[in-house]
Image 1 (cartoon, helix red, strand yellow):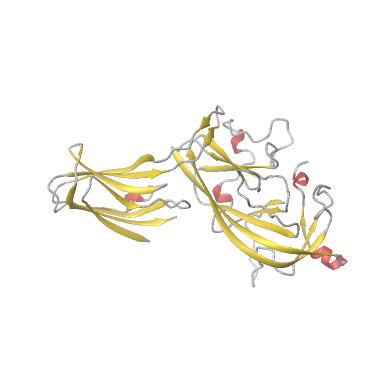
Image 2 (image 1 turned 180 degrees about the vertical axis):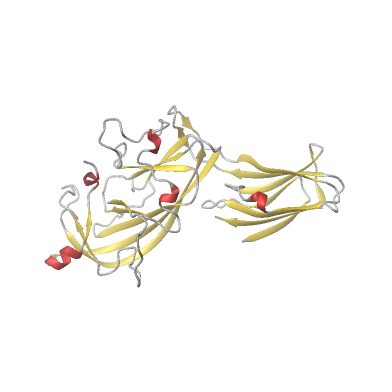
Length: 123
Length: 207
């Protein structure tokens, strides 16, 4: 079990690097938006590299992709609020690197007063 | 040369080692081909062992498959011995995920098939993709139950990894422990022969 805290000093903050032989299993996400200047919309993004494969139904080749992204979780946190997720995360997994993006009203916006905590296991 | 050990019905104490140990005997059947004269029909005693863990990972989309060649051929994973006196006993387990694994040896020839015509694994079929396929729960990463035996110059053993429909992407992690066994040929007594582990050639798995 490990954890990390980041302040949203950039619109995208890295949380966990990709580990080739494991998935990242979040056990806790806490967002402290008390010191932030606006409501925050946070997206937790999975970024990973894929391998070449073949489409089973057609036999067509599929090329490897570097930096494939999938959004795994999206939450809105009001200004002056502090929320934590634990049980809601039991089916969320990251295949590769985990990062968090912050938006305000749909526009990517940094705010050092928005603090994100991630607790996770590698499995 | 390829075995799935089922869950035990009972446990014994003290436990029985899962892997071949120093002093154990192994016997290769007469079905091994003339092209593998260093083992065909011979009996050996294991002189020393060394266990080497290794993980193989693939990330591919749902509905797709990829082949993993365990041999030392170009593009293979190099999990075969290079020494004629070495036997690799490789155990294989899977981390959880939505995927299936088919076994082929050599390429294109299924290990697991039924006798009725057409009852062969086929990843393109919505039903036959499940025929002969192993799932991650059949051999968990932390309790590996698939045993593979390889010697120098054995034909390539291919694992076909299929991500089943229902997920966008899947990361498949294959956990291997290669039990390197250094062999000494013996002329076995009847007792040694009875105690020796019999290692079949893959053609004996298909009839």
